[in-house]
Image (cartoon, rainbow over all chains, first blue to last red; front, side, top):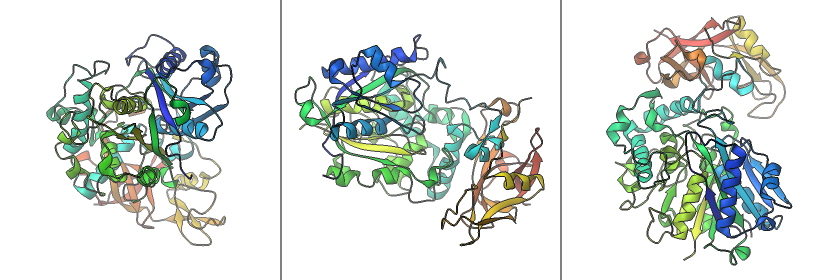
Length: 390
Length: 136
């Protein structure tokens, strides 16, 4: 046995509402989401003994354990690299902890007051320090601060090398908004978007427009991971980790300034073994959850994870209709994603992937068996293939 | 008026910033494999040799990519937008690329692979910053 394949399952999911101002503490958001996930799984405090967090999450696992009455923590760990680095990575940590027998059931969560700024600074704003040290000293003094600006450099280069156009980025935003409008829990529910809306939205950092950028959100989201053996006795149909991987490299040393010309990057590393480990091909994927911090990064993931060849994502995407539930062949971020459901740093995409594979999604993909789920690229990242029971 | 953050030189980057104050781009060259490297690093990125020399390199290159920043996310950007952040492919070595800002140029004048040259401009705290302008 030389991979994580089939050695861990997601058995519980839970989240709060997604809002601009939660009106409560980040600790409360975390506890609400985790408690909901435990109830969903049918697990009590004595059954859960591990917590995996995003490094940047302000919540201390020990404080969460105290609040939820978890009597013992046999595993705790965290995944660095901002919000994008964390979503699949925390689930991977949890999976490895249960697969090795170090813990019985492990929580992976994200909770923040990011939109209201009550606890977590808004990512759409810059880091407003007066000084810049280390790698940031080679970026910020020139006026390069925010993730959107850094991503814009890569988007421009991709457009130059491959003829990608803004409307291809826009098709991704429109697909996520389409699904948000089918999800009453989504922040952008009731606010339809067309490609023309995208094309006329204001420039943030040319070529990135406002509608190429994800939301800012207050909320909490959590999943519970355990072994397939334990999952058999639990309340929900288990969703198996068919394959998982993390990826990073020396080319990630400039925050989110990518090297588009390099053939290898964090996503190709994370994805290298996924399909072989899962024993399937790209054609077997029924529903796609690509971390959508910025639309150009979603487009690039299609190439980097091998859904199409490098430079061909624009043709793969076309007008984007293939991403739309119910008629598209590859529905994308079916609850609205970071772009239009809520920005819980991808954890809400994982929750929706689990719903799809349980058969309980609002935008249920018929007979969905395999979901492909990623963390954010342009930072050290992670990706997994989830499988539902036949 | 607010300014962009000032760079804090450290053990690895002091010669670079001192070079800027003298009006030159000064990079590390590995004593073993002779490759230039950027960002500064305590060991050669290509061969792991520790010995290196700081040398002045030509301040010329080409635009590798750029973005026109129109939304002032930092207080220091208010009143400065739109401004152009560039990645420069330096002529000194094919894989040597640095981030900077393009000056003396309207945003719509920027083109891919346009030749540029370094020009130094003082941060309000006194540190000289290597900016670039189009070579016309």
